[in-house]
Structure formats: C-alpha cells, structure tokens
Length: 336
Image 1 (cartoon, one colour):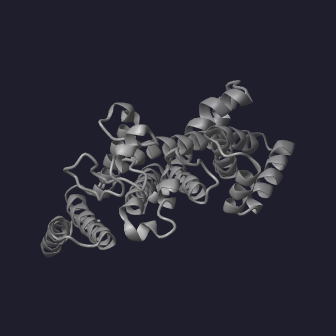
Image 2: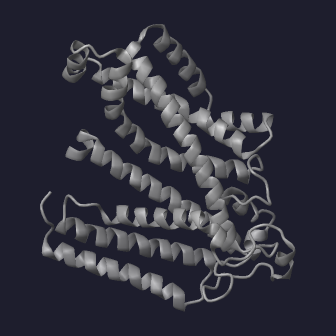
Image 3: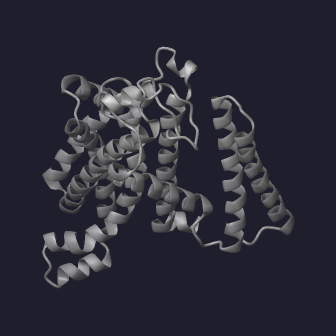
C-alpha cells in the first residue's frame, strides 16, 4: 500500500485535532458521567484513527499507533498492579480507616481519591488496581495452563496420531459441546469459589482450543523436509517434537493466548458480577461493577463507570495486541 494523498493526510490531522478538542471540552464542561465517557471514547477513536493513519503513511511496516497505545496501557495497568502495595492510595477493603472516609465521593483528579469512593468509603483507584492484580493473575495463570498443557497434548496427538489422537478428539468434542458460560456456571455452583477453583475451571475451558490449534499446526509440519532430515539423522520422536515442532507451533499459540487472556478476564468478571466468583471484600472488576445494582449506579454512576472503563480498555488492548501478533507471525496475515 502506497502513501496516501496529501489532502487525506491533512484530513487525518484535522480529525486528530477534533478528537483532542472533544476530550479537552469534557474537562471544562460539567457533563453527565455517561455522556462524558461517550465523548471521551469518541475523541480517542478519532485520535487513534487519525494519528495511526499518519504514522502508517510515514512507516508502512512499523507498529501501528493503536498497538503502541495498547502496549502503553498494559504496561501501565500491569506496572500499577505489581507496585500496588507501595502506592499512596486509600483503602481497598473494609478497615476501620475506611469508616472515616466520605462515601460516594465523585472522581476528582486533584483530590486524595482521584477516582472517587464507593458506598463503603473505599478508594476506587485502590480497588481498581487491586482488582487488576486479581483478574490478571487468574486469567494469566489459566491461560498458561491451557497453552502449556493443551499445547503439549496437541503436539503429541498431531505427531503420534493413533489411539491417543482418537481419545483427544473425543474428550475435546465433549468439552466443546457445553456452552462455555453454562460450563463455568455449573462448576462455580458445584465448587466453592476461590482463586484456585477459578484458575482450574478457566484453564479447563481453554484446553480444547489450544489442543486443536497445536494438533492442526503439528499435522501441517509432520512431513516437512526439516522433520524428515532430523529423523534421518537419528533423532527420536521426543527430540523432534521438542526441538523442531514446538518452536514452530508456539507462535500461533502465543498470539491466540493474548486474545484468550482478554476472554478469560471477561469470564472471571462475569462470574464475580453474578456472585459466583470472588466475593467482597476481595476486589475484582466484576464485583465492583455489581456494586451498582439496586439503583446505586443512578446515584453514583462512577462506581460502575470506573471499573467498567478499566475492564474495557484492558480487553481492547489485549485484542489489539493479539491481532498485531497474529499479523506479524502469520505469513498469510502479513501478506494481506
């Protein structure tokens, strides 16, 4: 794709400036919280589209502006989660100190509670970051289980075939026959919710897809020349799978893992929202959004908008990173 006409580049500049003006306007005008969120989202979309096109015109093969924003957001949210214990924030869980804090304070960046407080006087900024520690840890460990265990089973099934592959097919078909949300709700209803049970159930849910992806990629590699060359040099099946097959299978699994990470974050939040995940006082994005039930969101919409916006940005960023990784590692995507 060649460079865009100058007139279109100028239009993209106007588009970016308009988006910035919309965001600045929300800081001056005292608008409803929902309307503010919509305007800021529209402004960000204009900026990302405009600046992204300008940068892509200058460096067609470089990383897109949207991908850089996604990377920046993930670095910010993960970094905040890691250093959370030393951040100068308020109380994230019920403590005697929280009783002295006014309830339902509105967000004010210049105050001691920049994102406001909830109906218990807890600092929403502290709870959002504490929720990031919980949600990201559960989703990351569950994704790692699916990627490592499912990837290994898929490689063995695709390379060895036979009865092992037949058993793999039956088991994955049975798991995939259940709607994911129904399966999660069934497990959550049967087992007491905890961090470990959530990790186990979400990891189980991801296994079939990783197994199928690894098997399909292994089958496509099984008769390639470099595999035959390794076999002719006396390498055993185990060594071939580890040194030849796995390095070529891991890239598509990792790119899918970024997208799957966002799916698991949403799944964990949904369970917490329904009361089947971690319950308060533990902070998760799902049970923070659930605090808006019973008309509370109408009185103080920020207690829902704050965790909802953080959840939205995290899921969007992971999807953008997953798509960027897929385009970079998949030859068919890269050439399109």
